[in-house]
Amino acid sequence: MNCVVSKQEGIAFKAALLGISIFLLSHLAIAPAIPKLYQLYQQQNPDIGLASVESLVTMPAAMITLFVLLSDGVARRLGKKRTVLLGLGLTLMAGVAPFFLTDFVWVMVSRVLLGIGIGLYNALSISLLSDFYHGQQRSNMIGLRTSFLNIGKALTTFIAGYALIYGAEYTFLVYVLVVPVWILFVLYVPEPQLLQHQQQNRQAMWGKNTFGICLLTFLVGVCYIGATVKIPTLLVSYHGLGDDDSRNMLTVLAISGTLLGFVFGQIFSRLQGWMLSLMLLIMALGNVLFASTSSVALLYLGSIFIGLAFVGTMSSIFCLITQQFAAQKVLFVTSMALAAGNIGALAAPAVLTKLPELLGFDHLVMPFYITTAILLVSMVANILLAKPWLGLRSAYN
Image 1 (cartoon, rainbow, N blue to C red):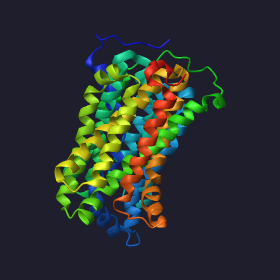
Image 2: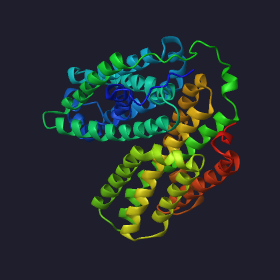
Image 3: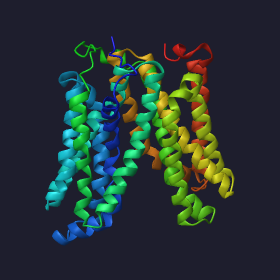
């Protein structure tokens, strides 16, 4: 039986559970410092190229994807709390290490370890919410978790950018923020009382429902990352707008998603099984606007739709996982879904850039028609297969 936390639980408990999500995208925080980091490491070794320095951002992402897949096995051996603490500890030590290191090879090693640390507890940031909450409380917390993830990305990027004033290596000190979160987690989060040691048939976990969820998160990853990557080029090269417009629209896109996270639970409690289909439709409408209009106001509306719907879609998927799968399967299915979404993000350039080029289509507008089609087909498939009109419990039975 799940440990259910009552509404009377203190703020510290919720802060500890949600706080670990702040660092899930922190590997991106040093991106603004890449030019100065390149200068720093080139002074020490002229053979270091820009691509190698840029890999300080991309390499952790690859390790996150890999260790999200492995986190279920690690948690079964160590327990969920120890796995989170191990992941946070690696994030802290590996994140701060480049401040003290001068050899670029060791800096790269530390970034690899950072990705391992984040990957270890990424899926746990969701499954733990399922362990301690149920019903609308769980939906509220899953929505808040997404907001904390986005806030964390903005916060770590801002602090790292500010630290750049003192020197490129100071950007890595942003990971000192892990310390209070680690302490909170140690003090306030118990080990959930689940059947952790019960042996599961991994083949049984890989049923059609798990595959369907992974396919959906893969496609959503393609569409969301594809849209955010393609928007700046479309605005500048096709619509003739300036760089400020693309920056502002991407900012609006991020903020709209963050705001939805705070009210997601209330909306999900009303719409239930229809929430996922509605979010897919809204994201499709956002892509249609970028493909079909030159109105700046409507393009901003498209940004709002895409950002809002992405948060709503992923939060809906995680809610469905926690509600429709047995407790001992939640971490495994969540891990697979997150990994599939990351793979979709990596596949976006091939699907939305290479494919239109091979077929002889326009490379600026056609990607948005492709993502619209993917999202609409996904929405129809979800309605037909999940049968939300029969109630939420029919979705994955």
